Image 1 (cartoon, one colour):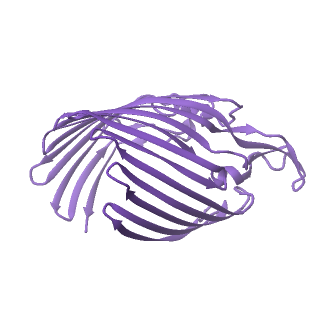
Image 2: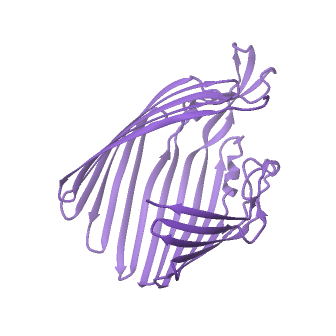
Image 3: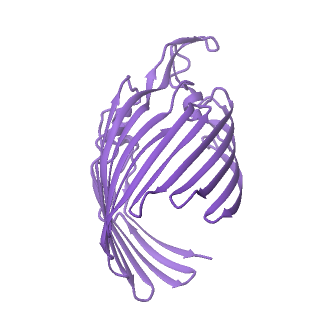
Length: 392
């Protein structure tokens, strides 16, 4: 009948792994993986083949240095043929990624450990990438550990950001707005500073706290490019392209407290604070700036787990999220209110292989919203369901 959309999806994968112990605490491992997927829907026909080869070798040099190194090669072959609604140009792409890494865990003393390393990569999207990292931990006394880390990471562009070609306005009008990939679009870069402290003076009680400060450079922003004439359609094109014209910072803290007064009784509490600031250096037509308000600043939760008689377990979790201040899809900058919800679970271990459970979710309110534009937003409703799990 008219209006029915048919999608055909298929694929498969195979993996092989070889491992050999090369000495005391030394080992080598080779992994080979192949995956093939095919998708045929009204928007496009896509076939993707991926080959991944990974080798790792670990070898302690002495009582101080424990070295791990490895090499990786990945080939992705993609053919995508658009049907008017979606298109990649060119339709065929073969992309290669070659990388290597080395890491040294250094035992400076019984109380002081240092881990240093780096990853070196070359890919067909952004070229050469270097990602070094360093981490140190010191035992201050029984039950007290302090640690810190500094690392650099990148997000490599995808084929979508490089090759996409979609008309986003009426193609019969002149000019035509077109979302275009950009071959010079670079990687998004992160420099992360982290520090943490762990306290466990009582066997039943522990507290883990971590603070971080992240610096972001070259984040994606959608910008208007230089107009050009497309002779194939005899119209002027106004290109919309990804550029690396946004930077920002994120600061926050995360805390986990666990308490188990009895083997059958466990409590945990979590709290996370995030302050994200983004600074567009261009027009930022996709409102990436609004992402700094799309994550709640405060998230907290309390969880209780009890092992009851007759192999019955009870779990309850209360969680609270503060308001979302604004979302990129909402032009007006409207956000969402925060919410507080409760989930509970009763489980009965009938015998070793069979578990029956009943779960209640979002029990404090009939419904609440978590994401989406106002006109397309669907509320998360209260729910109760039963489950039977059989293991073997």
